[in-house]
Length: 260
Image (cartoon, rainbow, N blue to C red; front, side, top):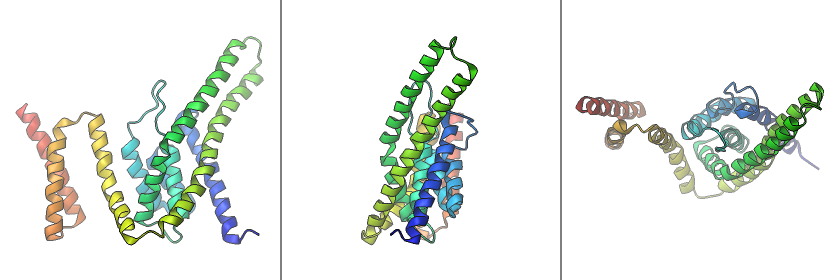
């Protein structure tokens, strides 16, 4: 006999899977209103589950990491939408009362490891829809408008079902993994909390690397290192560390531009 909390959990997972499937259509299939971007999908998922702050942290972090991974031509990028929605759902549903930084970090790491599965699923759906499109084009002279409309809706349905099935698989597995993570020693939780704090820097570095922003790197990281050391020695506030880091990067970029 299923208990009431378990029943509510199932309903929450099904609701997020349905909402995530609709949000996923915005990636390439329909609309493209940018709600599928992690920076939007994360807080939206968190809001639906009652913890928009956790969704904002996850969404902003994954936005930095995947922002330039675009579905151009035949390239199938990582499905950042599935990763963001799954990570947010796992973190919030796996932490009643509010998702902690360690659980957020573990959820991000867990869903990032699932990226190859999402890419494979996206590739299979693209191939299937390409076959449908080819058959429709070959028989376009013999098919009526209603039939073509049904074919188009079928293509959208495949995209929706792909995301829906991935959520149904990922979220319960993630919740089981979070339950096991909660039993690990405290040192693992501290490591994952530090992982979340440092992950935005990895995202910034990836963006700078992909944009070939070479005039900012050396001074930016030198400023960050000095700011962190000063923060540890003098217990400077986080805003002072951030301000020092950005200032050093901007001054370094300005110096390089004048020198060249």
